[in-house]
Amino acid sequence: MTDRRSFLKHLGVGALSVSALPVMAKSIFPAVTGKKPFFDISLAEWSLHRTLFGGKLDNLDFAETAAKKFGIHAVEYVNQFFKDKAQDKKYLAELNQRAKDNGVKNVLIMIDGEGPLGSTDEKERTQAVENHYKWVEAAKFLGCHAIRVNAAGKGTPEEVKAAAIDGLGRLSEFAAPHGISVIVENHGGISSHGDWLSAVLRGVGKKNCGSLPDFGNFYEYDRYQGVQDLMPLAKGVSAKSHTFDENGNEPQIDYRRMLQIVKDAGYKGYIGIEYEGDQLSEEDGILATKRLLERVGAEIG
View 1: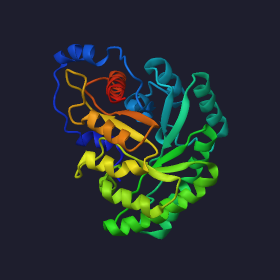
View 2: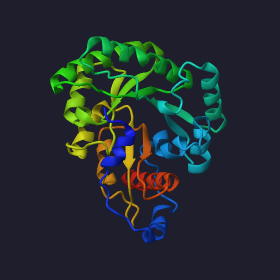
View 3: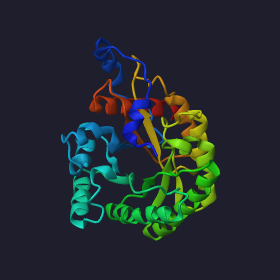
View 4: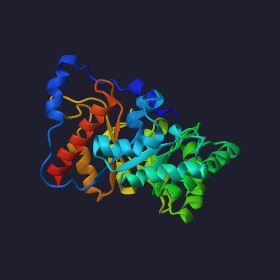
């Protein structure tokens, strides 16, 4: 499965001159007024991955940063930034306290690097399922509602489908008594085909197993069709963004069309900001995405 950092190589975004940035910033960051959006906004930790990998921000400070710097009071952690802490109760208690001190809700943990849940090798698949157990327990400890996982595997689409149904099903069975949902993102490979992933999730057929549609992670599949395929099973939504035009819109993704699909599905949960661009700083990109969500969400009502 392609990891998140490699996605940056496939963006293909149009160039935006440096001289345009000050003009653009004025249109992106004005105060938003009007009706409240039909969803709540959370911040995906991956939006700050360069800052975190660069040692300029510690995972323990993520919740405070979300609240004080961006005015966002719900967060989505990424396990890469505390990978050896899943069973460290002292660390998790501190992480929890930092969130509570800043009025921040822990929404979910995004899990990568724990093995392919759709492996066609039964032993490897079983190991991957068991590797995720500690993150289910950590998510419960933090008060999250879900862990985000990947439906990865090598083989034909049908072979991986059968394996993923088994792996996700067993993990969901473990997670259910903990009150944790297992949600799958379109995250590269065959999982970025909305029809395939929705068929996998329907094959699992468990109430606590659903989708996390990402607006941007479709490469050989129509992104709007993909989100529409996955929304009936959605327990989270990821608002991917890369760049912005002079009007504060994401030129590659029609946010109005996307949010209308989300609303039409009856979804009223969190939409997580996941900025992956490099023409704005991570901070400005997060703020730009937030303003875009607030503006379009208020217009749709």
